[in-house]
Image (cartoon, rainbow, N blue to C red):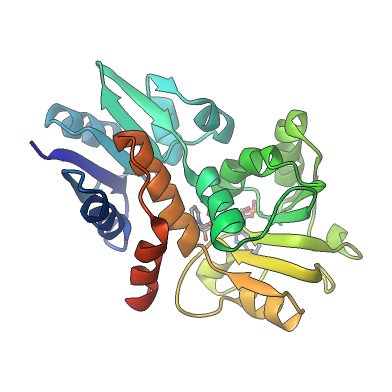
Length: 273
Ligand code: NDP
């Protein structure tokens, strides 16, 4: 019998997850179906329980339900605990297990697809919201020389750095305090690009050979990527690779099989994602 999976979000019409998981299923021969479910803003838990009752085996969770999912589950993996958010649910044995594959997705994309090492590099993470929190632990576990978290509301950057301080060399600051510093990897985890805005960044952030990584994805250069290009960043990337890698990690959690990401990423790029 076909095993059922889905992604919960609101809105959800834009989600590429059904396309990605259908491609993984074809590639690996796993007998699964994967749909997108629009959960009401005040009805996430009810939607999850209805899907479980209908025989669902697992699910992904996207905006705005990742924190609610963290609350809902009966048990969390260590990386979900650390992230404070859950993007992957596993149903079985009368329990719901919550995992978070976003951080692993970002690291796999940077290290494998973009061939950019993280060990002993200086990393700047822009933003202190859910996405920044989700990737901070895995970034520190890659043992960079330093992780600096900069945010519009500096207090949130300080709080995040304080939370992750036991894991490695991490500090928080405002954007203006970045003046005079440079980094090997600069990751934009703000939602500024959604509004076509650029955080007020000082010049000189990009060290020779640096990678500029925009977590948002799309066909156009975002203001951050245009800024990085003009400032001499050597390599530019958007977050489509992270999206596909976090999906592959979830597929592996559910099925015990790791799909090959490269052809799926290429298919999405060719289809104009
Ligand atoms: P949140 O709403 O949790 O956080 C938003 C962050 O952006 C805050 O740090 C906020 O600062 C900052 N911000 C918002 N507007 C501006 C602005 N105009 N200038 C400077 N800073 C600003 O969002 P998320 O963390 O969930 O998402 C962030 C981004 O990451 C989104 O673009 C999302 O699409 C992307 N993402 C991509 C994924 C992928 O798989 N590729 C996965 C998850 C997220 P302040 O604290 O001051 O309000």
